[in-house]
Length: 95
Image 1 (spheres, helix red, strand yellow):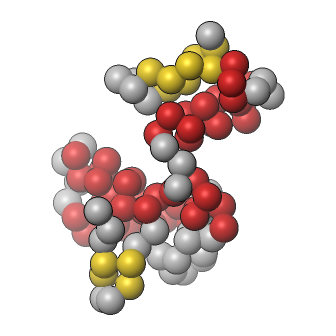
Image 2: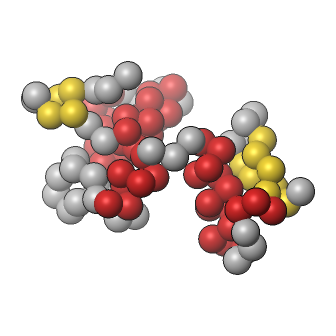
C-alpha cells in the first residue's frame, strides 16, 4: 500500500514507521512528526522534507528480515548471512 499526501507518494520507510507508531497508540499527526524527524536525523529522509535519500530508498525496499540482519551485521562487523531473523521480535541473532 502506498500512501499519497498532497499528491506526493511517501517513501516506504516513512509509511512503515508511521504505521508502527500508530499501532503503539500515537495519533496520525504525532506519528508523522516523530517518524519524519527520526528518519531525517538518520539520513533516510532529506532535511526539511519527506523525500527519501538514496539510503532511505534502499532501506525502504528491504524486507524486515533484511533490515534486521543489516542492523545486526553493521553493529557486530559480521556478515548478514551469519544471522537468523525472528519475526516476533524483529531482531536478528547469530546462528
